Length: 185
Image (cartoon, rainbow, N blue to C red; front, side, top):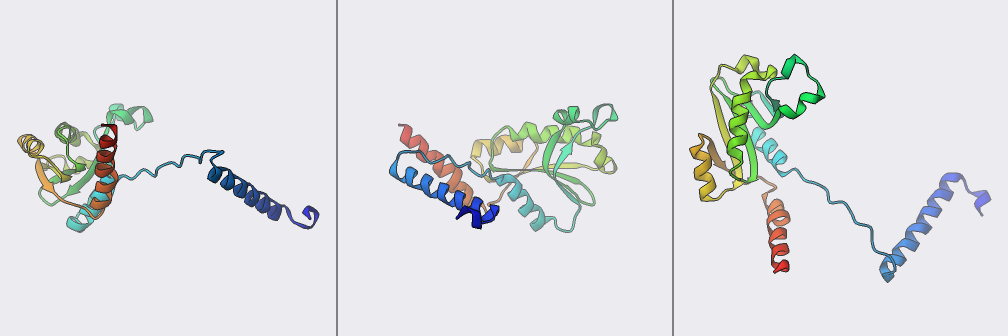
């Protein structure tokens, strides 16, 4: 039979036979099913895109953009660690917005945004905007009262916004974690 079939057909038959044997072994419990890698979802990046297109469609904007000067004026990979990525930078006629997105806000975002503001004037890409006022904004789907007060006290505007992917995130991250914690007790 193998003499009558081309190499591609033989390969497909061998693969089908192998898959069939593996399925039978897995179902019988003789072999464990291979672990499947979970697809990593960048919830905040999706949220940033949705927000930017919804509220700032008519303005120049940059998603996940590096902030900070390039030491020595060279753009080498070694300096990539000294620069940080802002989720969204929007240029308005009279100010620049630096916006960070969090599905669940944590106090660390204060230092993160304040660092972006400090680094922004040295960013080569934004030299023409360096003299404009900078407004820092945190857009988050969930935030507790203490964190909100802390963030606002840091001079950062807080906007609560539930993106289209909120329910999926909540089920995948919050409920899954809650179920895991309950199982441990």
